[in-house]
Length: 536
Image (tube, rainbow, N blue to C red; front, side, top):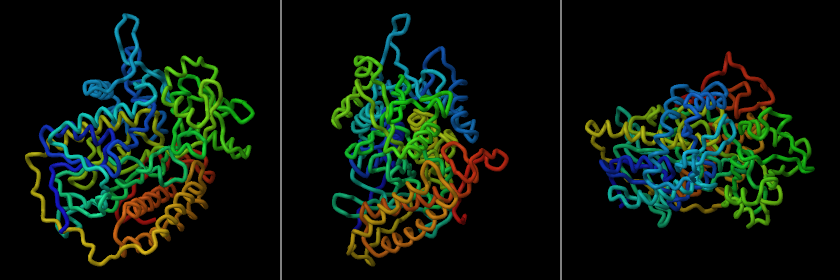
């Protein structure tokens, strides 16, 4: 018999957003946090730069808001930007209160304050950090707190297969009431019922051949929400981080934007700087501009990579500011203090996702989405550096408040049927999964990458439809595995990206197409929204 567990809140994902929400709710509710690998294997862990927040008296909330709006290329939601930015200092104070060890310095009065660095798109220093491993410091600290709380159960190596909704059970009105979950250790499926489900699954970088994301970033939350009937928005806006280390064994190693904030220069293979030809802000231009500039120069020259050089700074400065990166580079034979690093762009961050309000509510009652999986309107067409962790923390705490407000009126959980495997068998050829995974990521990189055309997008759409049908048939006939679940989710996310990209017939922010190279505010200064039942 399939195992069933009941909780007040099921949190799918163990990054900053999921853990922060769990901590905010656990004093009043029984919470389960689901992680499909080790608990700390999250996108949060690999975030090097920091959290943007107005902490300096010389800075202002208004300045942070305007910088964010400018980076978002005209389609940020101002109320979302204002809400999240205005709660920035509060989020930092909360992180400090739970013990996150941010890097500090001494101000002119001799008082100890958080050290601030500057990254692309910001008009001043406002990025709070823990050396060059901020995400790791946040993830580790929050996880320690969560493990100590008696009302939080942690299930690692468990991957959600699909959400359970009243609509799927033939009942109205529709509501999310749990999820079917695969225990990866013993390949059994359990039923988890919950009054509220929260998607905190992060991004979908693994839909591309080259990405800064860890292997767990397979778009699970977006795909599950879409299959459950939720609206998604702005999936065409995929941020490619300009600088990932170029080395055959340096899998997914991102070289933080903070290097450029501290004076690192981008160079051609002959040592010539080039960013000043593309933007007056040079290396501090927003990521979409820097990534396209690198892509242009690599294609123009037929080069495999460009170079990032901070060796003009003293070794003491470099080692004190970037100890983690310096050490990691050494494992691949590079000395950050004396030579430039070979770098290439890679898929990094999705600005779109499941459409939510500022408290993480989706269009399906009982289902919330927070962090990168969600589209709140903060990022618009391009995310400004270090606004992502800020969004995770602020929306997690807002979502917690919304859930607390519903405790008295929560509905009873329905009877849910167990997962049925009576009509399926074990897969006879796993090579089908691995082949389709490879094909999907390659054509997404080639046809739906940094620079797009309508012809490439149409070609990708035809390919993704064939793959989706093939994977759907495989899913229907064989027992689920974690690889199959992730592939099914990735092909769904790929289709949503392609459909959104085809709908936007202009170039804006992270979406650049050679067929429509200019901005068209008259027709496209708005979100690209897909809803259940939409076609095209």
